[in-house]
Image (cartoon, rainbow, N blue to C red; front, side, top):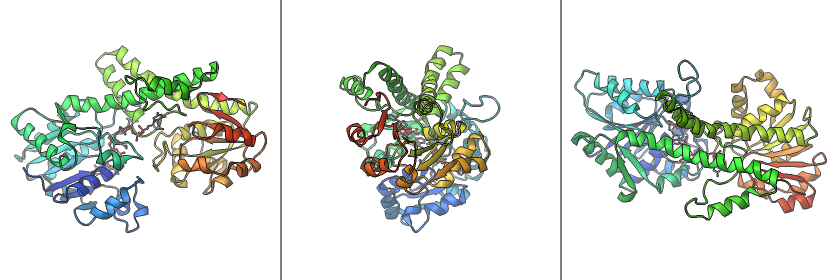
Length: 467
Ligand code: NAD
Ligand code: UGA
């Protein structure tokens, strides 16, 4: 089949950018991204490109080029399914918050709803592509639902996990390390795989398009995130040891990273990894291993999460103990709320837990993030249910100006590595703070010599306070 019409269910951080890039690179294919969330679709269709629901460098340019030509955003899910030859499922797969597997397993209710809707609407044969991250063997559940439609429509299920990272989504999509496609080895399965290979082949070299069986593809996605998160937890574990021993974690990271077998990436010590996927996907892996009775395997991977939680907790504990064991009534300025720079996404951001811990200590927290809006910050805090929303608004203030955020603060906590933080007028900030003026750099981005020379007491994750 020569694919001319694609539909993607789910217009989120993955569905939106992925389909925008497919539309850009395949002007001969009509791409329709659908979502049940009307506001999100309206934002994707907004004339003002700064209002797109996902902030990613270069995304606005691509949307501008393709939208209305061969890229469409719509809430009419049935129509898009009906017209498409290939349907990507890119809906959210969060950790279950109820029932069996609560707090561990992936919640597949949105996936199942999509499968049922595709089954109900389809009148012609379709290729269904799992773009969401799913537990290994989910494709068989989807296939089961689709094959019981009783209307004679044939479905092929492919697994095509997404490896983009937020903040670099567009460049990751334009130049992926690899594209992974899992499919059945039957003639129909192979044909479907080839159809998808052909689409990516419009811009990805064939050697980088890897085809496997469906289960390997599903599991590889969980494995990739587990390995990446494990590296962050490993370097964070060492960061604590460095602070006790006088070693500097950045020097250690550089020294080990120059070993070509280890490599330099993902060795930046931090306040703890966040993002919508690392924790959820590892929990999912832990849960799957446990359901197969593989306790050692599941305990091994669970440790990555335990270490991450410890890193967040020890960062806030350190602020409290350094500020003479009390932050009650003291203003603590947060620079950054997003889980990493160049994104407005805050899901599982370390800043949320650190704020919560400090609010429990009655600190007055003030937050500045260049891309995260006030409502999002309060929604993140309210979601924890630690105190009522009125109390959260009383104790935590969101500012639009970093200098205002730091004004009269006892301490600054750097929680996201936004480039602009480095360029601030740190003398001015120092002059307007309470003394001693503390900085807790949870990202290791600021200039120690400069800050020390101005008079700050500067704590850097993984080397501690060196005066
Ligand atoms: P998201 O929450 O940003 O977007 C999902 C969208 O799906 C939402 O807008 C929601 O309204 C919509 N949706 C849910 N059910 C629907 C239905 N039945 N019909 C129509 N729309 C529906 O999620 P995301 O960050 O884009 O992640 C999607 C998947 O991709 C997840 O499985 C995630 O693990 C995976 N993933 C995410 C990233 C990332 O960087 N965010 C990277 C790789 C993989
Ligand atoms: C991650 C993976 O990198 C993607 O390949 C994957 O597709 C995606 O998850 C997903 O499945 O959702 P993302 O979460 O967007 O991407 O961002 P990362 O760059 O991986 O960063 C994750 C977290 O780890 C961030 O909080 C980041 O600050 C932290 N991190 C990363 C460190 O603390 N140190 C590092 O050296 C690297």
